[in-house]
Structures are given as structure tokens and as C-alpha cells.
Picture 1 (cartoon, one colour):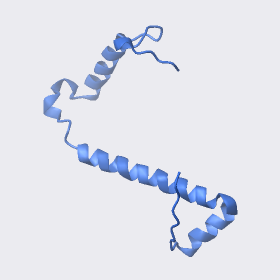
Picture 2 (cartoon, helix red, strand yellow):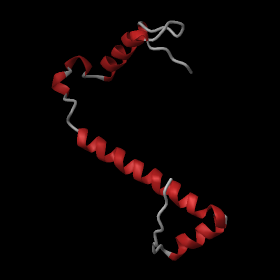
Picture 3 (tube, rainbow, N blue to C red):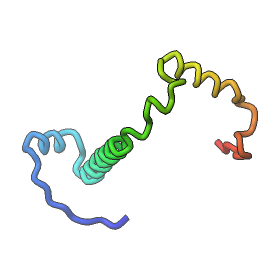
Length: 94
């Protein structure tokens, strides 16, 4: 993976905690992992917000109550068996 240097200004207390809890040679990896995780969360949040309204309650009156949803899930599970191949010929290789 190609790397790029980045200079950041962080609050002093954050830097002190970082120095206290993360060994010197692990700090870059630690900060990179934290940033990647937070960026992933932000992207997921944006995707959820962008898809808001894709499901409209009036299009699915059969799922109006929690009991309706439970029934729908149970009906879907009733046709499944753990010892049979997946539908469509797909195999779960574990």
C-alpha cells in the first residue's frame, strides 16, 4: 500500500493519551485504523441517508406491524434447511 505523509494538529490531551496508551512504533498504524474505521462509518451513514425513502410503508401493507414482520421472517425461514445446498446452486464453502 502506498503511503503519504500527513501533518495534523490534535488536541494536547488526545496526543498525551495516544502517547500513554500506544507504543511509539504502533501509533501510525493505530491512527490509520481508527481513521479508516470512522471513514467507513461515515460512508455507511451517507449510504443509509441516501437510501432513505427507498422503502415505503404503503408499498408493503402486509408488513405493517411487528407481528407481520415476525410472520414474514418465519415464513422465509420455513423453507430453509442447514443441510441442503443454497438456492440457485450456490455452495457455502465455509
